[in-house]
Amino acid sequence: MQAFAYHRDRDYEASRSSAQRYIDFYPADEDAAYAQYLLALSYYDQIDEVGRDQGLTFQALQALRETIERYPDSEYARSAILKFDLAFDHLAAKEMEIGRYYLRRNHFTAAINRFRVVVEDFQTTSHTAEALHRLVEAYLSLGLTDEAQTAGAILGHNFQSTDWYQDSFRLLTGRGLEPRALGNNWLSQIYRQTIKG
Image: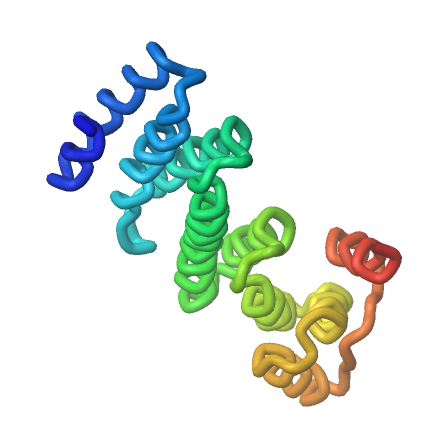
């Protein structure tokens, strides 16, 4: 209850300390799952806007994962899974924000590196389709048509009904290109994995 009271008062540091003490002393107690969940919430509730440092987001992910793995049958595990997915999406949003920043300033290689992280590491998030579209834009700007077409092919295979695909399709066909896997690059490998499973 002490950890809960601190959390309610937004004293997250004290809430974490109190919850951790309880877990250390009573790891098998039925309330240990709640204490672990409060510990995770003390990080999660501090996740701020995308523009800030993401250190707390990483800590929230670790604490939420701990809740899910140590107490999978608890009532808190389901909520922890939902919050984990939201925090994971938050990290992808940060990568997208930085990538868009570089793209607007014509720093195409730096932008590509950020969008690649989203495609490779955050592929289950809501940002993957946009990341693929932005890769089409960046690669076309650099004249790397094989990579642009391959990104378009992945986008078409997985997100054909999105506006992102429609925009990429227009960009490619406007240059006499089409979305299809070409070359032997990192996107071609992802395309093969996507098609073959």
